[in-house]
Amino acid sequence: MPTDTQSSTTDLIACHECDLLVELPQMRAGEKALCPRCDYLLTAVKPDVERRIFAFSLTSLLFLLFASVFPFLGFSAKGQERVVSLGQSVSILADEGSTLLAIVVLLSIVAIPSLALICASYVSASLISDRLFPATHRVLRFLLLMLPWSMAEIFLIGILISYIKISAMADVAFGLSFWSYVLFSVSMTAMVLHIDKRQLWTLIAAKVDHGH
Ligand SMILES: [Zn+2]
Image (cartoon, rainbow, N blue to C red; front, side, top):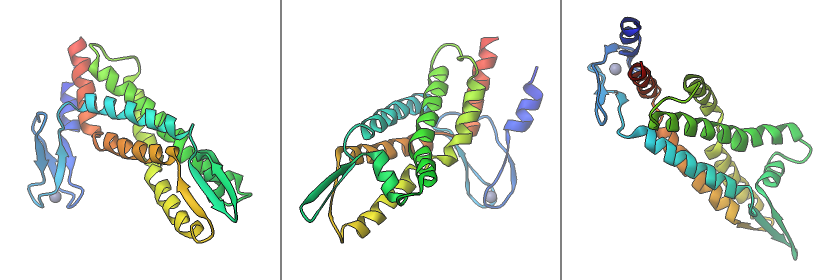
């Protein structure tokens, strides 16, 4: 029953560069659509996207877990040594006394990415399995809402900037957690690069149609 409204909403896409409205044909995995006026990449249908999202999500979650259990940074100055965890390094970066900022940073570098990764695993597992899991639509919508608030790479840049400052006063060593966090950030970025709103909604719709 929804075929008419669906095709009119999902097949029209506006070019980000020149605002031209382009009607897209049915696309297969591996195909790309370019804007006919300015050649901007409108959408690319990546093959096997649900399996890749699932694999990158689980890998990212694992590295994020490692990042929260081992030492993150080590400092030594004037014979004194100090090792800090990921959480403690956030409060150092956020300046002592600013608890609110530390909480916001922790949310954006650990809590929100974890939630997003769990949602991404759920949606992709749902697409891989024979039948859609309950509320897959809602979980995907929630995932898309959270992604812009995940700030792993920005945090890493912040760490490197503070490293330059602190290394003038003390010897700084990166711990196992730091490297885990770097790998988590790379893997999460790879996952996000596979998320194409349009393609995921199309995959879900195809699965719903198939189920009836
Ligand atoms: Zn264009």
